[in-house]
Image 1 (tube, rainbow, N blue to C red):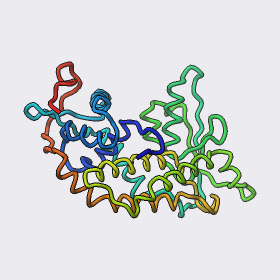
Image 2: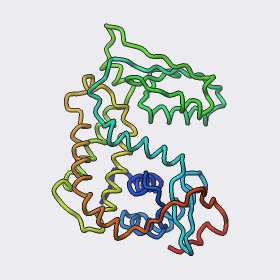
Image 3: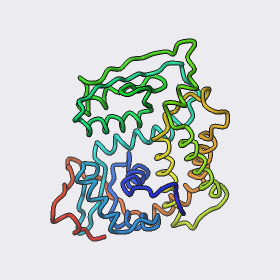
Image 4: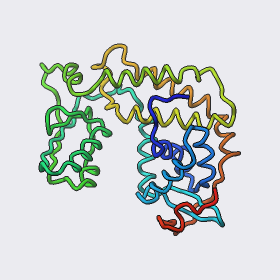
Length: 290
């Protein structure tokens, strides 16, 4: 099926691993990944290239078993996936319990630090912030950004405050000026239109695993760009709740068939403890038997 956009193979890979590997201490055979991704419309070359790049970036580990190469998570990718799992299943897309507080973050970076500025803005967006003014970003609730600021090496250039709006402040207007609500709403509405038919339809068994992969990856891509603004200050017809209902219904409907397919299609082996796995090397780049 046609998804919201051409999902990046790395996004699909992380979603796949979060679904099948996270918390299980297993590695998955490259040939299994290629098979599932082919059913999701991703070619073998793109899948292999994605595995290679993710190993070189420290997001995957290799484990050779005979002539077969298996891939598992690193501490870094496990942390990324655990955060995504919280966003999807625990935090949710609708913020009904806002306490009226805001987190304000101000930063001042040298003009030449374009990469650092881009990285900071990307991380802030993922954390729910929007640009209130140039160099001053805001997010609803109490958001702990200490780890991301430290990781980016920008602690000396960032100041963080907790705040409440003045009684005369038009919060709804501020939200509309700071975040692109119409674009986000359109993404939620398009998601519902694409996936709602699968609330009542069932695919062939082998396609269920790939469809569940696609719906998860697309949903995570949308909520990553959602700052979870307080629902009391959003339009009455805000579509996030309906979209989340569609996601959960489709996911649950696909799950029995997807689990059956995963048992048949996926070759998994236990992680060998005490090993870091093979890193990128010329000999291992494309030599595994898929």
